[in-house]
Image (cartoon, rainbow, N blue to C red; front, side, top):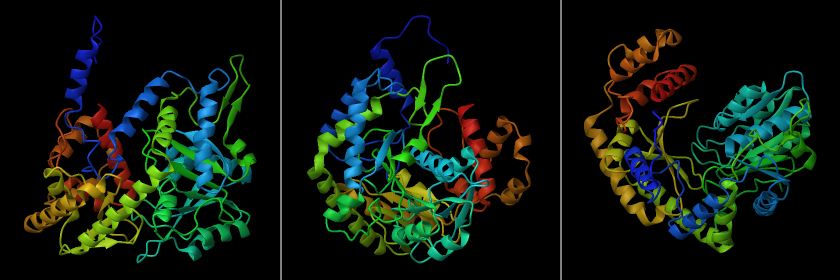
Length: 471
């Protein structure tokens, strides 16, 4: 970036911003079925944006300097605690940070020489990230390939004297399934091990679905043995990114999540989160969203998402060759035995709809994921029509053509020996243009190649993609 000699006007900057976002996925309207959460109520998002802007320059680093953040955080965290069985919480930047703090607290409180955490293969990679940063071993266990729920016996068998945390999801993201939280928490409690429920997706959704008539099993801090829980407000709380809460049953565990340092001659260091300086904008946006919607607003959104998810599952079952995986909440995943789902996703994208591809793993087939939000109900018939058309087109096209020997070539490569320019040439050989401004490539071939590789090699390839994109 060349810094302009003379500052630009707001009008010029907004025009440039419009150009830069030309190829971005739309954040409103429901045609992007992951990453964004839309109530379908513009006035709510507008209120959140105004509150976000009003708090943008307030620094959460020192709550004694800005007492507004203490009051707002107590209100936001208190609302989550009221909904999820009580507890003592921290407002964070997102689910990954909430999970990071939960793992830190468990590691520090348990104080084991070789700490490990036990989790289902469907648990979010944020746990792997936290474990990587915090020096904790990850012990993944299988799920039932019919229900996609965690195998309780496998969880029990994986635990030992160094286990500091056991994880359950409510729901797990890939198939939207709630793990047997009560059983997992019970075996953890019997062993004297902390138990975290990852309710980043479901924490601010499942209670409203229950009020709307859904059968939702107990999953929160009211369940004996559950010691912490994470809940994202920028998902089904519909707040602006990034807004999440982690709750601890015991206030002493919350203190374990904090970081303090007095080993320097500067200002006092006490952080509740991984970050130090951080804008209070997300806190203001979350506070405003909760206030703008209220209980009745969230119950109404819960009813709408529940109806949309039911109609979507029924509609998918009626499209030849497609089948739904699991019977989750408002996260819907589907696959096919005779249609390539990666090609289907590209065809849907060409028709203006983004369906999120998920690679095969641990016996779970490659599939497409749809997060049903408050705005989905109004467009569910249009979505099903596009999926049916895209499935038929994918059936005619057949699987993506992967150049002969490409998978074997990649498997044998020393990726660390390739510079970014060479890797970009390799990507171009399968039709992926990674140059800035090139727009969204068709991804079926890329996903097919990734799907054929082991997880560790997929990770290495993804790191190189990111490196090339950012230059």
